[in-house]
Length: 351
Image (cartoon, rainbow, N blue to C red; front, top):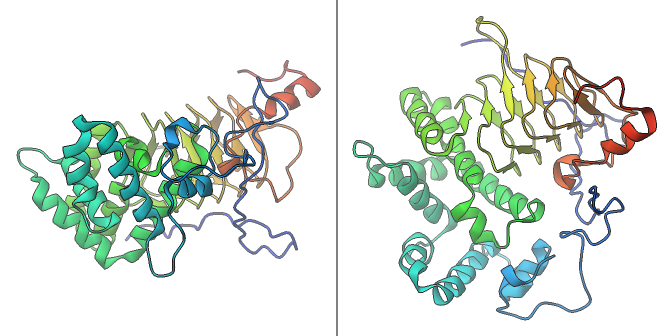
């Protein structure tokens, strides 16, 4: 059965109780080299005027998720799937605007009765092969989502994570249809369900198809939380005993790898709301605490305390720990640690 897996590190609550906390972190300005104060961040802008119903989101830069809903005239009504209704509105708009996409949008979204149906149809067509038929894959994906309703909840959290954190995402349907990191992640959720229920050869077949098609490699045994953003996603590798918490963000070419050839618990455990920069490598059964930040290109070989920033090869802590309100996994601030370098000097770090 293998070694027992450790849970992701807990976040210390503001009261110091150790209770896991997951504040949403929205509305905080994002700092960049060009905009060090964070003024005018795409997701922090609100503006005075509400967008007009039916307005094309792609032409309204700076929209928050709520503003994206408002632009489509989709209210939050009890008992109705607000996100699915918004996606259908976007599909109708885009099919009228781009007739070449009308057939694709109709078959993938407008002809489907739920977000689960649409996603299953889309994933099946992406992963099908002459010997792995799309009709069989659709039934497989749909059955897994019916058996485990938490998959559908995670799917919705993942779409909202993309829409909230990625400035390149202009609509909910864009994340669903065109972001390969999102698609690869949702296939993994099904593969993980298959792995847990003893259908391991099929789970490994799905892992292989995702790796071939999207160049993203999640072992189906890896435990992944919800609200995850895989930005660009190319080259991401997550090992068998890895654990990733909720509301995390990873960029391309991140590796959560093991060391040596022995089995058992050998991969990183990532807490909630962690940001892992591009081309970072984390090796071994280390723990990365809640709210930590890993700088791009770092090689992490030791535990990372909660709310700290680790940078370099090998990675070391930079500056003091941030307050528990810090949420790098949702803020996507990848350059603020440069200020620490400027204050403390660059000589001791290899970048």
